[in-house]
Image 1 (cartoon, rainbow, N blue to C red):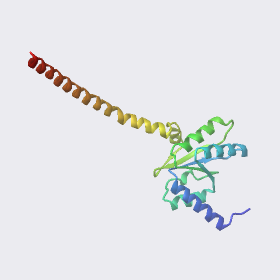
Image 2 (cartoon, rainbow, N blue to C red; image 1 turned 120 degrees about the vertical axis):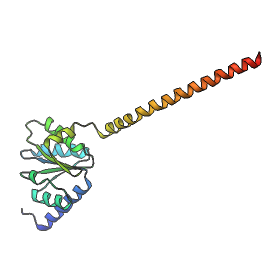
Image 3 (cartoon, rainbow, N blue to C red; image 1 turned 90 degrees about the vertical axis):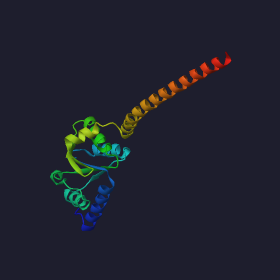
Image 4 (cartoon, rainbow, N blue to C red; image 1 turned 60 degrees about the vertical axis):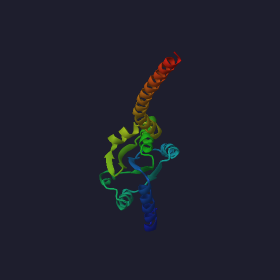
Length: 179
């Protein structure tokens, strides 16, 4: 059944909105996946807050260019799906997990768009290996907190020394006054 111009415009508008709101867009080739595999993939992605869209390359290209996304053209060939997410790690992690778990899966990662940069499948796998956002935040906080704890300990040590010195001097004065 042919797609009408109005339906294409709706798809382009939806893709534009997703490119605008997502922090990351991961492109993949889903050629050869069964309906059951696609269903499992969509469910896993949805649980992580990732939206999977299947669209014609021309429509993806038009929507991406309209939103200022440059560099995807070399990857827009063959069957293409796009995973959009506000979490920059979730789509890469979920897609690589899917590829690893499924038997005889033919899904391939093509490219990703993140923070104005387009990169290939090799870097998507690096992103997938990053720890979750909460762990990264706690690591940064621990890195900032460690030097501060050291400074507080040093200042506390100095103040304790001053307090002990004053206390010792007061005892000396009390003893000399008492005698």
